[in-house]
Image (cartoon, rainbow, N blue to C red; front, side):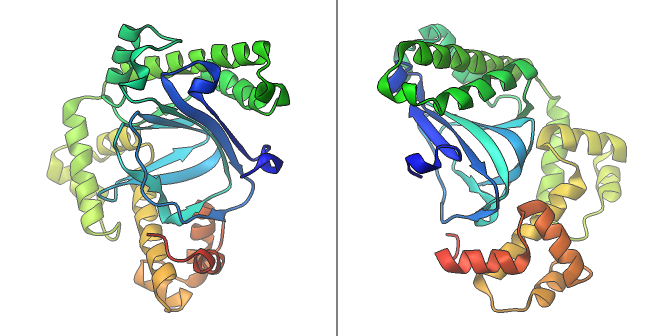
Length: 298
């Protein structure tokens, strides 16, 4: 974004501070909703996104949604293709780390080679989303502050040493979060069945009570497991699927906003607009205008 936008976004390559196990890390702050033509992306190493403020939602190939609220982090494992959903970044602040692939991370600087292998191996084995612990959050805020320090770009030794120390702590806290959480396999299978049903129906008309009865568990158990594994209640996930369908229509059709609202299960255009803005930080008409300026999302 250029040096004039350093308050809104910035990144540093791991090799620039002699940390080869990290490919690049950085932060991004969107004061208002911003449309993007960014398409699917993946990396040789895993990517970890920390949502500091606001909320946003990513999607994986196959349409699975990964929502993030302030105070949560998400993992995108190596080679896992992902992108911001609906082609727009809502008002939010994030910090992110892209880890290096195995070849470049063979001689890590912050972890031992064996620890680095175990760390990468633990990532993603027990779900994609986590809560950010206070110790980790403090170091992320310090990293963001230090990255805005102009002395970093002249190679100031103390500033770089501080960045390395805080980056080390963030990696360790992330490793701990992914190593010690272990949902029950049966519960994961239940959630997968619910997701399949929701996606088959695009979030419309799925009864959680009926699904729970069919799967042989209580509605409360299904709700709790879905929220624990996916990161949001089933009703919220279904709502996001309807918003996603609406965004496709807004970017590719000439139908009126009222028509799109009714076709996607909203009682009125006013209700549709309120829900839409709550999730994306922009109204349906504002979204359509931004998307048309950059072209439809791939």
